[in-house]
Length: 148
Image (cartoon, rainbow, N blue to C red; front, top):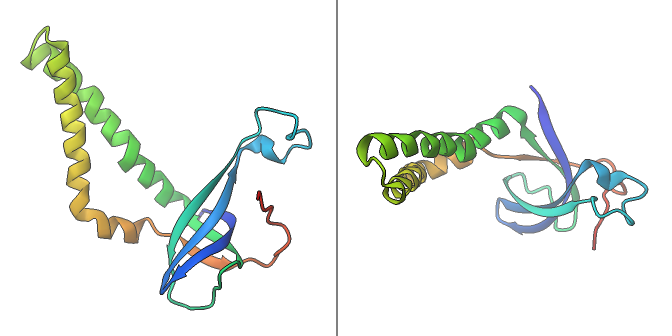
């Protein structure tokens, strides 16, 4: 099973809900010339993790681990399926239902995409369980680069 791991710092702990700050860096952000290059890109992200072990503390360096297959499933649900719905309903409504009325066809395609997202709302809790991350204490406390 392939996993993706990011090093991060525990920002907040509320019961078994842990918020971890990770630095998502582009490939060139590790380059020695990154200070002089405009292409270097780093973004901070906050990741929510459910962990009831109680072994993590605020400020601790940890590894956030996720399964690659879960990430691909999330991309499918969040981006690919809505795009297919949008691209599929637009020609149907433009050429079949309302020929020549581009504005109404676009509204119908956007409405169908919105309905797709609305149908995901009742499944929110099960999706959160499926698309979850795990934590592991980091053995290398010094290798995390703090951008602040």
